[in-house]
Length: 78
Image (cartoon, rainbow, N blue to C red; front, side, top):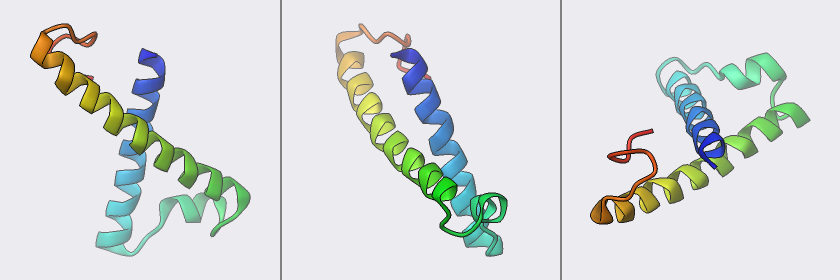
């Protein structure tokens, strides 16, 4: 489970960096590397979106666990 949460966190960071590049420079890194809306780029976008959901749930669980002081990450840090 820790592997899934860490992988999701990394994919969310990649997605955030890509959106930052789009917003600041108008450059879509995923689209440039894999083509605009090709099957591969759509899979990457989907994985980033699913990872955001996983990360949101993991952070919520961590906040609940922090109240009980039984978080598997120790003070709820990834």
